[in-house]
Image (cartoon, rainbow, N blue to C red; front, side, top):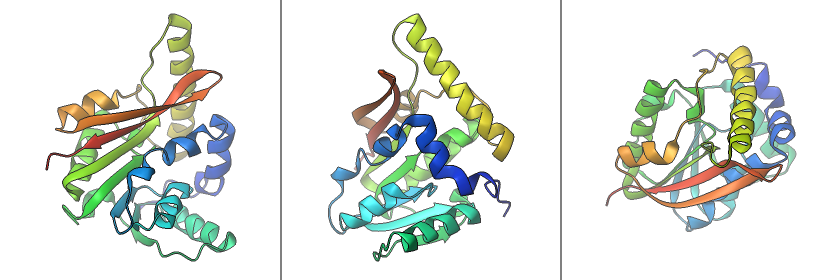
Length: 215
């Protein structure tokens, strides 16, 4: 399996915090208070793992799936460096090859779907929904769809293209416009029950969306 994060993976935490002023960190854990002890939760893409650790500390049974061996090694080193003793299951796999269907109470895609072109993003999100049990929660955290006045929208678009352009160059991620995730989630049968916004320079540049799968 090709690892496109061999270089960027070592600096992912730093880049995320520098670019967002830690708004990305806050966005990633925004919906995890909905978890109960014993809930099974899946994170698609491990990133720096702050969300997975947060969920595990709430008593959830946590699985992270990532195609990048570099990101998984970095995650494990972070756990060891910070003395985190809780168990988090780590799976090195393409998410589409991960077939534990209808097993999870919550499925989380934080800053993960944006690595794909639209057709593949839809395919991946459909698969993530299938991994959830009937009635499962599906969380998407990402750059928010541009709203507001002309200057606000222009800033958010430019800000987005700075990020997507960087990852397109260094990790070969897809280069595309900002996805309207609430609309997409509804099209795929989810009820969007909650939205939380996170700011940069007084603008809502990120959001966390909570979707509910039909029971």
